[in-house]
Amino acid sequence: MTFQYKLLILAPLIFSFSCHAASSGVNPKVFDVFRDFAFVGQGPARFENDGALDVTYIVPHNEKDEPRSTQLHTRVQYIFHNRGPMNDERLGVTELPTRLRELGFEVLEAPKFNGGQFSYPYVGGPYFSIIFMDGDHKGMIFNRVDGRIADRNWVVDDYILVFLY
Image (cartoon, rainbow, N blue to C red; front, side, top):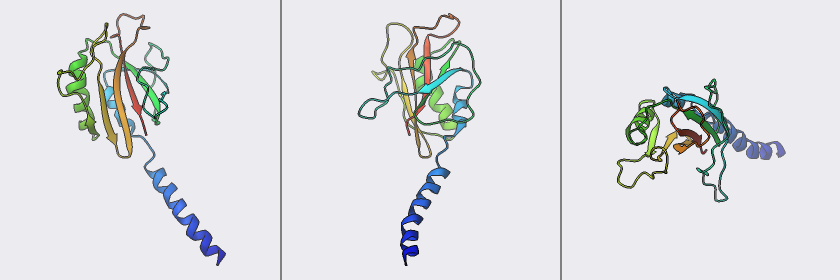
């Protein structure tokens, strides 16, 4: 009788973990969205107390192209640079969302036009963010000016990929 009770308690737990394990991997093909970018680093993303991603924080990273990770993880920033020329408005409105869709990702939010959907920093192009889904995983691509870029061949923006969950 006790065995049956244990089985009743353990079976749903085992099933839950096995389902989670089957869907836990983030699809590395998302890196193909950045096929003409250089991967320059990664590190833990920061989150606000309410759970929102802190988009003002960018992990310290290099300016040199590094090998791309073979496994992606949630709550990690993956940082990319581009040698340009780059049009951040076109990149946020059409290029990156189109690349995501072509690779099978569902784009939930992306700027549609420059009618107040971009903010413009003093230096660099407009800021944008794109929210998308990869199965059970919610991802975000956004850009920020990187004032530490010494190599003037790079565009002054960081392009950041983060899977929130």
